[in-house]
Amino acid sequence: MKKLKKIKKKSFFNLLIKNYVLFTITNAIIVCAMFFIGILITDKFLGFPYGHPKNQLDILKKGNYTELNIKDLVGKNGSIQILDKNNKVIYKSNKKKEQIASYTNNELKYIPEYDEYESSIHLKTYKDKNNKKFTIISKNKYTDDLDKNYDSNEGWFEILDENLNVVYSGGNLESNKTSYTKKEFDYLTGNISKKYYISKYQFEDKDKNKYTMILKISKLSEDKIATILDKSLMITFVIFLIIYTISTALFVMWLNWKVKKPLEKLNKAMISLSEGGTYESIEYKGSHEFMQICENFNAMSQKLNKSKEENEHLQSEKQKMLADISHDLKTPITIIQGYAKALSDGIISKDDQEKYLKIIYEKSNNLTELINVFHEYSKLEHIDFKLNLEQKDLSEFIRAYVAHKYEYIYDINFNMEVEIPEHKLLCYFDEVQLKRAFENIISNSIKHNKEGTTICIILEEELNDYKITIGDDGIGIPEDIINSIFDAFVVGDDSRNTKQGSGLGLAITKKIVEKHNGNIKLISDLNSEFKTIFEIRIPKK
Image (cartoon, rainbow, N blue to C red; front, side):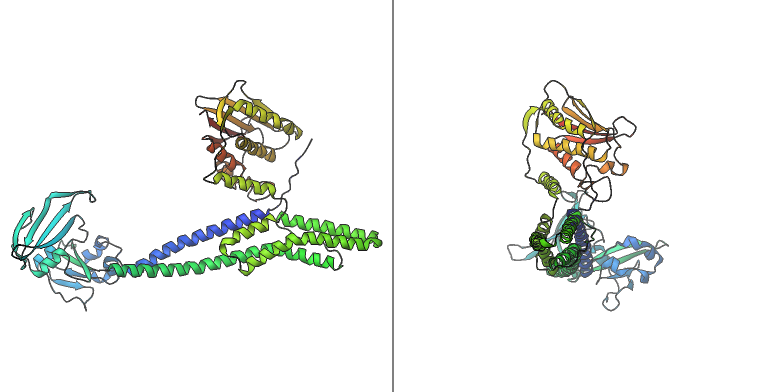
């Protein structure tokens, strides 16, 4: 019987992936943080109000006006006034700038409500044939659908002459006003101040006495807003650039330390050996590529040392052999060390970092299978990837696959149960990719179960699709990964190691099945005969 030897080691590629993902997540967090910081900075510079007067209604009812949060009501440079029932000012937040002591009823009437969004005032001027100037003022009251319609029954218009006398009017007017004062007209049209938006909020105190709050909110020109936005963006970008530079430097330094440590030991040992020094075993625990290099170097050094003790007359040949082997080892190591040093010194641009990290990885040994897995996964992820779909007999395909795997399954002391219909089951599928999907599931079953486990493969025809069942009566799937078994990088052990594999096999299988417009699900029942079952459905058309 053949047994597959599994050695639990840490992969250097996994180290790169782990730290690259960590670096990406860190930068994503930084970007999100900068987004919110940018909003806060912009908001601080704009100085817009946050709240609504009703949020401070309790304070207003008690008459404790000094306790009001003025900035929350009118923003950074705004101010308020409180009027009694006679429209006299009884409180003002900015005593130096506010000179108005009272308002007339008409003036107050034409000041818009704080949240009066449902009406819109429009102005238009024209001259008659006698060159007299007239102003048309109209007010439209919108319905609930603010973006589309307004209620024509609630609107009105007036035509004013140069002295603000009403010469003609129409619509649903609240009063038959014959003329306006300049201040009334400016309040009505919102032109009373170039610096502030003015509105009113009426409320009652606890004794039902009526009061009015006049709110003045600073106006900002489009140029001013654009300047503030540019300034906020610049500050946010500078902060982001500093934090990103620091995080990148720390990442490169840490990765350089991880790579440089075994290289320095190897380099030191090789120099010592090449200079005729005594043999010292290299002790290193880390990624299995470097461990294997160290182990190979140790084995080589032991053989050379033993050969030296046994045959002194072969010293010259041994030295030559050692020089040749050292040269062969130094070539890839020197390349790795050179790129690592370049990363450490920061001479590699950010865009080229990943490329050089891949070069370092490619010079490591025995990761061909792992590279292929990640390549296959990324290929399936690519938007341009397409299956080579051909209409074939699914029964015959699975029968041929089982026949190919049958001897190997029994050689490793596993059992197999197969149920495949004798008649043709035609559908479109990619033989290479579907075989890879089956292989990933069966390889997982072999990898995680003991000898004597039975693997079942069942093909059934249903109304609209074909159901392929692949299962085993092994130990089952751990509960903590059942819901995420098809996610990338999920393995049955928290340690990312060679024994457990890349954690991409089932993720690749799922993508292959989905590329066939099918679906796959896991059925795990520790109380049934087959504790782990993968159910694949491929559509007939």
